[in-house]
Length: 421
Ligand code: HAM
Image (cartoon, rainbow, N blue to C red; front, top):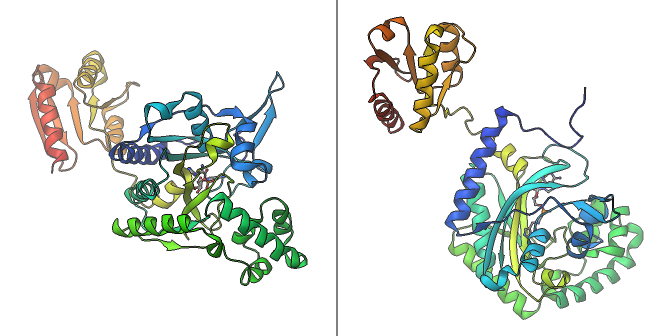
């Protein structure tokens, strides 16, 4: 039997409701913040990510699904969406129409990582980007939106860590200091960090290796290298988050894995998913558009992994029914039943009806199984008296009503009362 590819997952009907609920939260929250949706292709040129996330990042050097297509162009399955959004903004000159461009997205991303709980090769991300402002107000806005979404998904055990990487200038001075410090202790560094020393020394700061960690105690600190402007930006952002009552801690070792960040970086963390402690993260990218041959446009945004958020909100009751009506009928009156179900749907009433000519008993079982709020019963007696029985499944009460033009209105009224109980 052909099976799905390792690291990918089918989202089965039993799981889809949780996804839809989360997508509703995302749609609703982004609307409250007045962000507009953008949808970009899954296929992009590999160069887009080597120039943005960076040749030396794990995402590009180890994890990207990159391949020549039939005409020899190097393409990839996008590993993230920030660079794709930036490409589209430049390509369609979107910033000209909207000096502060607020966009959100939701879609699959691909990274060749070792699959484990909360880590897949095809995973899904939603996120938002606020493009065009270099001010901390924009950082506060996207962090608040991410925070609101995680909360609205019913997740309460998470923390927010923030840090500042400073401007490119201060970062390159810090980088030099780091290289000189770690080069003197090269033999004590883990193999991974020796490699990082060559290509991305800042990543050594968030190494999980014990020997690396002991070296970090006396390593130069990023904070000492921050210029005044970055320090002000960071303290203004901190005040704004506090004013919004969003709890956070400052983690001076937080550097994140993508090269485009400048100044603010942040991560929403959990202790509930084993090794995968990040629910989402993001930061500011004031040089990204220039890296992609565009003008200097500042931006800030976040991305959140849907699979991880769903794993965390799983304890939420999944069993809330969304079925309003189940029509249970004697198969000899199939034409009437099909016509009635059709008319209910035209009145915007969702309805499930048997299409296998099964017994009354089997149909009643379905009504239970799918959690119908109302059951409509159409048997021989009802047909004879031109009536139908409406049964309220929450109380078991039932009444016979006339099977006429007013039936749909009556059902809508019943459903309204049930929903407002
Ligand atoms: P990222 O930290 O690489 O940032 O990914 C964001 C989130 O995607 C992670 O926190 C995690 O929840 C999820 N994620 C990443 N890799 C996997 C995986 N293999 N399996 C499951 N979930 C995963 C970004 O991608 C940036 N574009 C975020 C951003 C937006 N920065 C600025 N704007």
